[in-house]
Length: 299
Image (cartoon, rainbow, N blue to C red; front, side, top):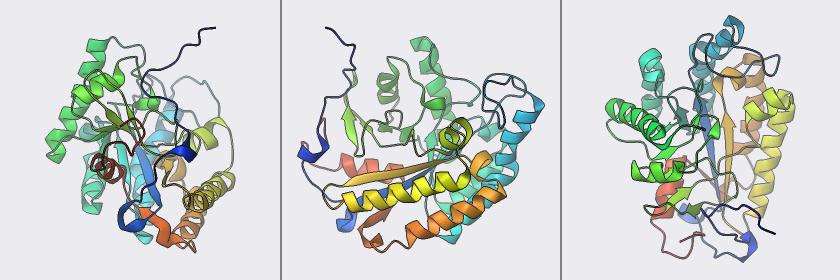
């Protein structure tokens, strides 16, 4: 029986792979993906805070806009409390409407990752030339404002087409976040050479858990701590990546920030924090690119 499969990567058992360390002998790379997004008013798609599948209204537009007006600023203050870095997954149209956010990102020294033009649209279903134009729009905007091209990409809604990794590799991207298939980075095949897949969570994501699955904030933050604790434990046997995905319009609500603060305190003060590399996605990718071939799966 023929089962459709991807040819981007081969099956690899994590317990049978070559061992390696992260910088300074660390075993767990921990990074936070901060999704900073902009939406159209009454148009396109986007989450609703109370009902799934609702049309775009002034109510859910304003809820999402809260993240850029209020939530993201309080969220960055919280990260500053714990001296935690983050990779900011940004819609490029934010440069046109909320440039002040980038001032804070630069002040903190955080990474800017390409995340589409707006989360009101998806890549899936675009013809290749149209998707190529979308990727170019995002890349050019980030390069214009930041002085360099982004290294990483997450599609809006982590959506892709059959040729998306090829187009990203050809546009100069070195890693992508759309493939939640592993706890270690792996190489993906493209028609122009390999591109690195850095682990990014479909599960440990406030949009998926709080909005879609209706878990409360305490439940979500408990998941975060349990994931971190277990991965610290497992990292004795193999190097791992633990990522948390957060959206300021969700986690930036004050009652949620209070719970997030408690979770982050447990993470940064873990008894085995000496095993943990608190970092950004681009640093993980750069480190993997510097490794000898044959260590990272797919190389």
